[in-house]
Image 1: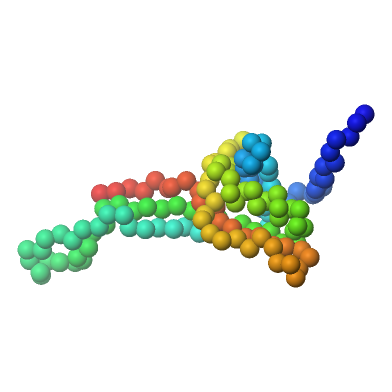
Image 2: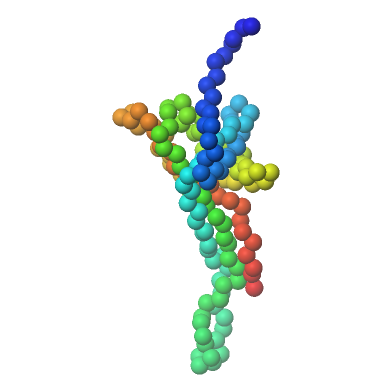
Length: 145
């Protein structure tokens, strides 16, 4: 048997708390995966899309000037990890630049987008590293007038 390459696999034998598995397309065309655990911050972003000011005939009857026709809403999830080795950060950084990222929850797969930003990958004064970024879930359906 000829060994052409040595691979290192990080195996955790316990079930992580609040697991969220991300799968992404790497730069070689394959897929990579990482399970983020413990702490995730869920944020709801809401913005007004279309507004108008109706014509007012009788000022006595006015109970508000602006009207909202439509709202836009989506959920951001802030993920992060601490105590990573340099090799782990190097592998996970592919997630930040991948055009295709999926959250896997059991049999359900949801395509998400990594939020734009600048990410601190490495500080040469530290031996272990941390990484934090946000993913954006698909837009939520909101009613409109």
